[in-house]
Length: 480
Image (cartoon, rainbow, N blue to C red; front, side, top):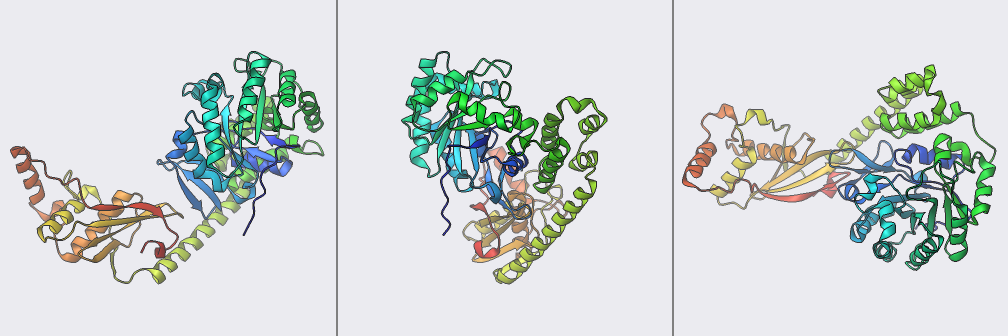
């Protein structure tokens, strides 16, 4: 049994949570250069609760995927004991639900209480929480009691030192493991001086680790400056944002790496972990800064794909090589999945290679309707659909049970609904029962629906069977 060592927040150099920057490639690069802990970008609780956890066997990652198939959060084994998941939340129960969703894949959970941007504060999150200590206490206490991983929060300072210290003392009593303090007020911006004296007052007032943040503009120009900022604030650790965004090798004891090497290292991770090209492009632009008007900068700005970005940095061969590796891996996994499917699958399931094409059916008429109608006519229990999703490609397959027999399509579909309709088609064709296609002539269900509408009767055709919840499977032994 593997025992995870709890995160220690003393004497650490930490990558700060940064929107659009703190994605997997940047976090891994920061770790490579010497960061001890990395925070992901702030992710909103409501969005995370819509996600499903998917094992990506091609990339060897854990993905949290939204209903629109967009990857909201991606992580991997390399950072599992070093990454802190930062969320935006204004509700204790939602925060706990998200924490439990990701707890096994991260090293800690953080609540953002310092972001002054409207997209965060308008929902009562971020810096808006600073004016509601009761809610802060509720969220943090619920998390500390509800999960096993360490809980932290990140705040900005209040108008007065006294109020800030009192708030932090109250936060400390919730049982959190550490607190990160951005030494600016919520209305202040990077060009304003960081208030080291306030961070120092906090550090001297509480016993939990205080993580100093906000020194990129005034203090941190190179690695040695990290210690200078730590001493000026009497903090336990230092959290770096913009200085790391500009050049993540700020964490390197031996000094900065050439920017060209840093950017190529970043691109390697972006390709390796299939980072969306718009995010890759954004992060590279932050590194180029004043070089954006150079020929290379203009080419980067014009790039419209990961491949084009690689070509800008003379890494076209690397892109082709990695694409070939991914294709080979995917093919191998598909072959393995098919072999497992063939070996383990229930031999009593009747299969046909069919798909549902709604263009072949009248409006609002489907094979599931016909199958339900047939079951009622024959006095059988209504059909039961068991639908599974394959993690490899996120495709669906459904098995329908009718009169103690099981039926499914041999083809996998892109949605649960399509997979269920395909299973119904297999069943209907096996039974020799009409399935409602336009080519079958007069459709008795349409006639019945029209008659029902005229009589003011609403037939319950929308209840088309019993649905068993969708869950990911690696092989069919998990399905039946």
